Length: 368
Image 1 (cartoon, rainbow, N blue to C red):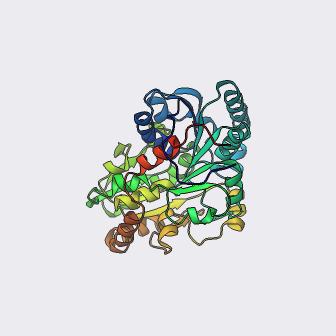
Image 2 (cartoon, one colour):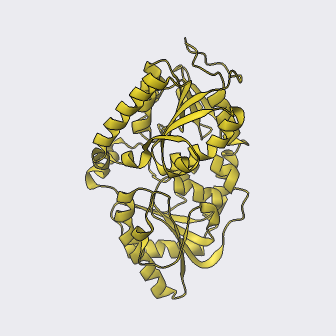
């Protein structure tokens, strides 16, 4: 029988199986890990890990990069690796018998990982609710079948799971706490480029981004460029524009950014940095997605403020139009900045990582 009451800190975990997929999930799990170890100093962690988790000192079962993809067609390319990963996790659950299984983001794969844990009686926690409020609303029942506790980054999400038997908790967004206190970057003549964290999307978007920079420099020869490079991205993929490589949104100084859709758009908003979104996927993925998505916008800031404050250029990307959109946004940033300030306040209840850690550690082994 599932217990949906507020948790109390019980017997500290000794064994945690942790699985991530995307770079954003890897970064979130790596930030959470020290808080978990503070509550359970003897905690053993085995993980499907990206580069940041590997650097944090977990025992690595598999590399998350092997199963990173987005979109119907793109996911098909990593399907054999995903199936191997599921078999690996299934064996590890049987052999190692962890006290809890924590899966992070990447719901298409991670919910399947979580379901393996639940089937074996392991308490399962999933961090980051799928965006069921944007598309595939029926997925709430899938989530409830797969996990015991769902940690939500947005305050409106727990209500979507009410009555389904899953403990859904708003914990806040760690990026809001970390980034909202920083002064907004406003260095004129500097453009930030954020082309994503997956190889396929970077290779598809980068030629467009590079042409946009060339057009901007025709209008402003002294233009400087900053490039946010995810740990999963090779520097060689980002050639041809010059500029500085940075690895954290907090380090950006730009007055405007060109960004692929995804978690980075929310981080820029929390940083107070005006942006233009430019994104494309395989044509088949796009056509299928258009029939499933229930909302008008793609970027998280627009979805969360429920208004088109961020210009979105999707699928058929036109460099001159993107360059013009960046110039317009840089010249009139106040509407975005105002919307972003309100968003940051909503997403920061205080100590999000501490709240996450307490939920993961709450009751030790799953109550059945």
